Image 1 (tube, rainbow over the protein chains, first blue to last red):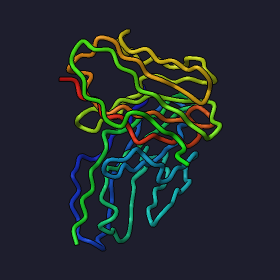
Image 2: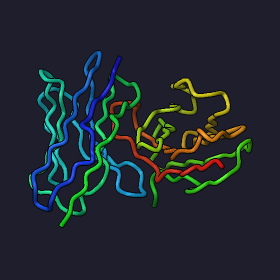
Image 3: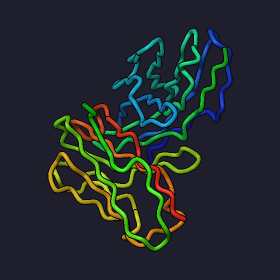
Length: 111
Length: 113
């Protein structure tokens, strides 16, 4: 079946550090891939997406590249801020099916 | 204007009660969803409606009954609440099921005591 695996958190970083949150997927067919972010007490917001192999999604300094050969969609940011502290969810959908989420990775950034 | 709004934001109730959560979206989307987020932040889809028609029902107990009076509204009614129903419930909508961005409400934190 279709599934998403994310690295376990929490990820704890100092401000301005480099961030990587790993995400790999298993899918039948050709999925679209997403990163959502959930700030404390809020709902999820789309951070970025990629709909085909080799696409790079980017937003607010975050990037992720759709790698079909490694079935991965790792999230990166060159210099994190305290305001980036949140839970990050990798997700996929295949054709017109539902969104399937990973377990989420909590990021904590300290000044 | 809030794109996807849910009410109430918090709901505390006793076991055995019946409760409803309401959701409305003003984005003109055709598809709406209910997701459940457990205490470990794991998100799982419960239901999906497309133009008032049930598309996805992910083996949710019969005590949960979604209702979509029109494509802008998707309410969730829960009968005979149990302790294990305690979670955060998120409503979401998207223009096209699966492929396009889903917009989420702020969530309803349900606590069953």
